[in-house]
Image (cartoon, rainbow, N blue to C red; front, side, top):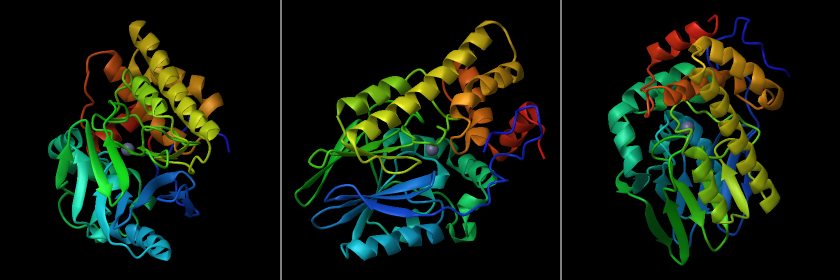
Length: 326
Ligand SMILES: [Zn+2]
């Protein structure tokens, strides 16, 4: 299906997205599984000798119960760890369902939860009604990490080495990947997407490609992206990295050129949408992401080195300025 042209009236964010997706639960290696759903946010699962780690939780505890049900079809080991690849509510707010002993995140992610967790929660719930199914099951307040790290930490699940790595900024300041060196499987969070549009409203465009280089340098043979199906061969991993890199680089180059020429955000938005739609318009959430992505890219190219906080109100205001909101 082709994307709606930016000159026509578009429904705010993902409010027109109501169709339920088909869940897949795929094994990648002796220890790694992927819970994916046709471009909806993914959850990764690592099954060690003595415990299970869940990477990103789903948006609500009720939705996380379906992940737990699949895990229980393949193991009865305790789910001791939840790893947050970054702070976004759609990946974090299901955490309580797992009743983990520990919730692990980078110190940068912890700092972002302190700084903007409440605003992000309200903003994301407003954007994605379908993805916050049974939002009333989310406990009050925020999901707080109980272990934080800087740069790298290693978790041993018995004899299984689980490397938790912060390779650089990209999708957010706190991006964290999980790497299983024995199995050569990588869980990327939203640093890598496949057949799905990278959300870049909180991104660091200049840094993102270099962070992808660092992922590539690990030579993962399999990769679970933030959205999209599990990538099961080195060729598919390369395609996922390349697609994400191309989108991020082309979007930023287009916005930077428009900003340097002195054009305003709305003009740059329309030009960039038209330039990218033929190549990327078929990716899921393209029309949802573009206003946020171009706004952040314009900020980074002009006067805001760090992403400004999105609030439910700012989301609507921005959307009205760039699209005719319904
Ligand atoms: Zn995200």
